Image (cartoon, protein in one colour):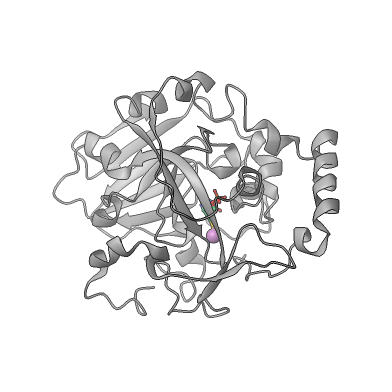
Length: 320
Ligand SMILES: Nc1nc2c(c(=O)[nH]1)N[C@H]1C(S)=C(S)[C@@H](COP(=O)(O)O)O[C@H]1N2
Ligand SMILES: [Mo]
């Protein structure tokens, strides 16, 4: 299975906008899209009680002067191969996942390893909104208001040892509720895994998200907790995390294992290093239509220049 090359045409582009919209409305009303809509609300949909977020102060995000992607685009055009390979599959099928209760195992090079319930894990952690660009390796991008907190805040709670050099993250493996994991066409070695160098994980821009658009995360966006690393291609931002392991050695990461020539460990957004099958110099920024593809130039580190010092002396064409 390959991450699909940037499709410059998608259904919303070849169908006049009004027809597309009314079809979507029809599908929603007739229940075809009920999954996507339903996961936005409801007590158990996101692994945390619905009141949980309402009861917490969330520091508002700083505007970035770029148009925000609509909530409906960000929750209906997704990559989450556990639920299928089509962009619409996660919104259709992610409601089949039960995310309540949710436990995260923290293990490896930490003084205080353990299994911990999500609510306990997040107690005492301040939430903030972060309005970030998300740049998929397939050359489309969005601007999404996440709600979360720095990765470092959580990892520090478990007291990394001096041997901790990397952080590995694992997604839930539950084929009974994740139809993509049951698919005979999938060649992904589940669970989906990702990793960061310790200094990357500790960078203040790297966050765990538990919400978006002022609400708990919908399942298709990685409920109840996912990583968001805005200067890297989207596949690094692993969803629905159940295990965090601190390691001495560089962890495997799913897309690198599948196609090492095409997807690296670092995966920093880089307009100067093309994917072997397409250019990374530009991207389609949502909203995009046939008449307005909204193609914009891709920026080094996705515009987050403050991370450049992490990669001093590293040849980014070799360590892509
Ligand atoms: N577990 C898991 N995490 C994942 C993926 C996936 O297939 N499985 N897809 C990744 C890719 S390729 C992208 S672009 C982002 C998309 O996040 P979004 O759907 O919230 O926009 O999730 C990433 N995290
Ligand atoms: Mo992606």
